[in-house]
Image (cartoon, one colour):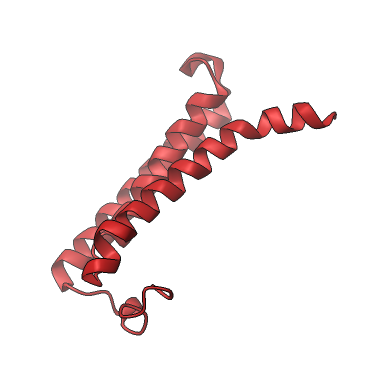
Length: 112
């Protein structure tokens, strides 16, 4: 496969990586680091996973009927799983008020 065609096939991946990094970093910079809070950590992860799944699905097919059945099923399962997990973890952090996983790293922005 020639080099230009390989690079052309990676453009959607670059967009998806940019979207994921942009979402994660913006929440870190605007909320997590200044407030030393992990409240939106899992919710942001789930939302970025959902957005990246939708962008990936839409970039590979012009419409829903032109994509393969396997791609449709996997995309729907990923959306359900990430939505359910994000809802559960965000509810848990709201109920408990703190996530013990971040007790040691919360006060150091480079580790956080």
